[in-house]
Length: 178
Ligand SMILES: *[C@@H]1O[C@H](CO)[C@@H](O)[C@H](O)[C@H]1NC(C)=O
Image 1 (cartoon, rainbow, N blue to C red):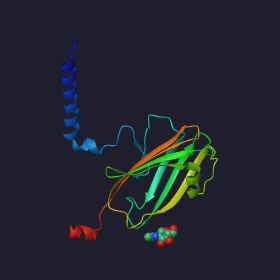
Image 2: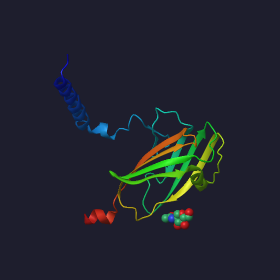
Image 3: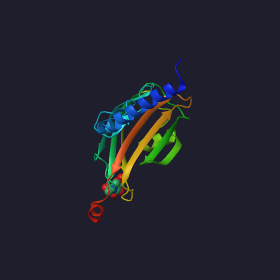
């Protein structure tokens, strides 16, 4: 019979081997997660939870300027298609992290949010081309921001998982001072 200590030793070896495997190869830290796939267009935005079927497929996202800058307007253009109608009651769970700190973890009414891009529920299936200007305040603290947005229909069918990371650098004056 395999003893408990032996299992413990084996798991410790596997654990340390994989830890060293990761830490010893810095590149693996920057590779996108296997659960994510970059969306064509060169933005820092990816589809996440890709092993799960999603009602929205996003063909491209283009942002300008790329990378986004504090104190500038960001234009986001996206093309995607919905394979099923989305009715009132759909929602989106949004998580925003600043470094390792959770800034926002909130659920929003998806149909209210699509009003921002001049859409209205029910959203019928088909192709969508969206464009939106977002003002990024100059006061946004520098650092790394990571966003996850997961959208669901009112019946909890998965619509989409979108993720992205942005690093806002400190101002040049800060760099000179620092
Ligand atoms: C961003 O766009 C708004 C209008 O959409 C405009 O009032 C504002 O001046 C713009 N800001 C910059 C920094 O260009």
